[in-house]
Image (cartoon, rainbow, N blue to C red; front, side, top):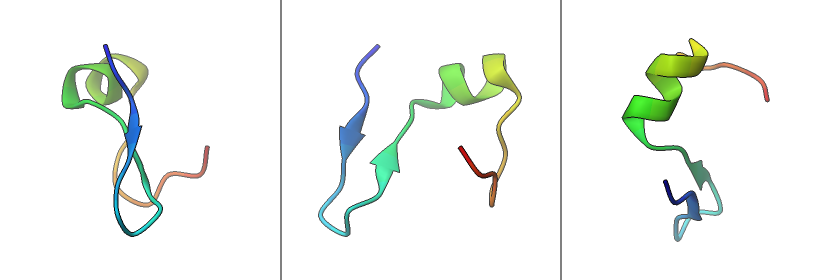
Length: 29
């Protein structure tokens, strides 16, 4: 899977990876 940084500087994590790791909105990494 590829993780990118969007134009606003946010790290974009693919949904399947977020689901597998249990990350949700507002999580701190």
